[in-house]
Length: 219
Length: 219
DNA sequence: ACACTTGTGCGAACAAGGTCGCAAAATTTC
DNA sequence: GAAATTTTGCGACCTTGTTCGCACAAGTGT
Image (tube, rainbow over the protein chains, first blue to last red):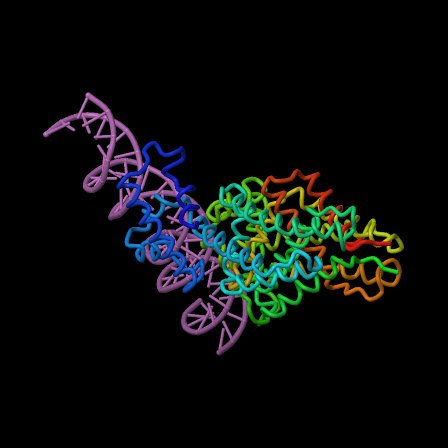
């Protein structure tokens, strides 16, 4: 699916394909795959900032400028990785999700799955956040769209809970966004070395619990 | 105070000053002031990314490389502005703050003051966020420290409220962090054009209310 | 076979942040 | 006043993401 994603968004084919397929297109597809593999490897080895486009190009067997035939920017390579990682986290969550469990537990289970993925390469999350600070760039919106999908999943969970163990008049979308933003903020501290991986995990846990209970006193 | 901040953090004086002052230092001080003024103007005119270091240098009457005698990086110029803006928001808040008002209202009043400042140049906030995505850089930590001060103020407010209209066993620091992260996240959407300035304001309002009430049902 | 279209690659070049070594200016020390 | 020292400025240069024009390759239509 990751390959399909890249295909659909590739630069040279803004409109629907005129011809069914083509030797050229096949060659391009192989190149794209090589680029993606090289990028993934180098991101892991040197981090996003450490991975030079020239290095990526070299490993993919082409010049740096040729990469731009297949990708709009370096950030886009990141988005592709991020999308895959996210997908992986989702399926992992769905596998062990119990829709009848208390909402609080389902949320916790989701973050556990997501955290496991992010811990492997925290870089992705952080740089994705950076991408959203370039509002003119096309990638910023795409990252936000990706985030929206996570928010959507959280919304879904809360929606179920609203009929059971949550306040019936709850604005689930707003609540989902709040949870998401809190988690992002905490991870940023983690990335900056202000919290260990474990501390990050438990802080998110605590914050979600806090949000569930609310700040005001309960009788 | 902004000048003092810049003085203290300037590159060429890592250790305590050997001599009390110096004509040379006076000259440097004037240069720093010119750099800051030029940077502030150009940030306003062209935005952070649009303001070239060469342009800033030109307006300050020096070459681009000379700027680095006084500042460690372009991001540092931003931090200086951000600190000033933040300070301004704080004093504005303190002027109209009523410590006896309900906690919910005090928080709202704080965000109103802060929002007024940020709306003038949203760039600051967004780019500051970007700076935190370079964890190796010294500036990242400094931005987080700046954020911590805001969190501290929120904590203070909540601390007062805990003895009155909030849950007595509330973890005020965690709550303050949660509020801060939510606000940051919403502003990012604003910066990306996904929400108007007014929508940003009201969304933060709604989120804070949500956090106060909590997700779980109340009798 | 012929032009014609289109996808792919290349290397030079650009912009912009940042580094480096040298020279001038300002002060201290003798 | 001369020498040493420190601050400030300069311009050349590096790095890296990105753009551009050109050339080649792979098909298509006639």
